[in-house]
Image (tube, rainbow, N blue to C red; front, side, top):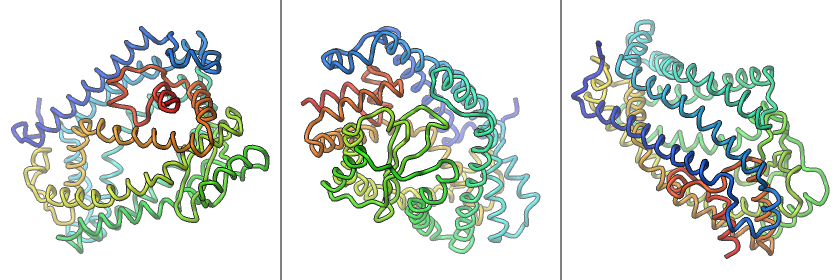
Length: 435
């Protein structure tokens, strides 16, 4: 077996050990969740038994359907994760990434210029992602056209799916082209300070996309119409006026043409903030429940959760870019993954790619930390929504209906929730709302 990597290099050892450890951690967590479903999936939690709507909604058939849906996704994930593990290790161990880089450099200009760096960066981004995209395609199709259709969610047609892929590819290529060109300019012109400038570009790009995405990109995939006059709009407008929330409009998205899942979200910032409701949500909830669910989302804004995240994200962007800058100047990082005689100037993107891949192999360890803060904010937003509506009952019944409509698990193991859930479970949220 002819390996292209240096197995004595600490970077490759971290990648291999981290990738395998992450694989086993996830499989352990998913297995205990599966085992818990087999044991308790047909049982209605005590706190729900005392709520008439929950007792009526989560009958034996519904509980079985939830377990069957989660199990189907679990079995698909098991095969997918094993395949991904094998592919990820094989691509690294047998030198796929150095091979495509050397092949690209053979066809691009030798002098390091903005054009050659951009061309190499763009092509490397596309080609390096192809194997995982190809591998993931059959699993994605199976999930969409077999599992989601079997459980009554997917309304996707082959024509719509192909159209979505073409549009997504087109949009993705444009965005990647813009970012890689800007990065190439900085790599070539600002060899020592590119990290600072690139962090600023990424932050600016994030804010710009908050305006561009809802106005120009999402309409390529879905139709957005103003929420019709009626009780639902009156209730929502009353909540918005009560909390002093200014927005750019209330819109309904035709989500039902693809899926039966329900959701609502805010997009944009400042005067461009838009409130978007899935049409499936309007069919599922009463006007009071809709207002309560939006009251929860408003809580994130009024409690400054978004601002707090920005205060963390913006400094972290600069810190991360500085770390990447330092790592791109370590020759041992490149040789660890089989890159030989690489000139860093102009090709810092290879170092960034390798450092990101290295972080991805061990990032599982911080997942529970971020989820702890996320769940705390969800509780706070729930309390805000209940307060602004004058009662927790509309939010409780709304959450019950959403959980039922989306076939979400009722009693996953505490360890699984601690590690994987960014939102509390339905039972936990109801217990906190009831005090």
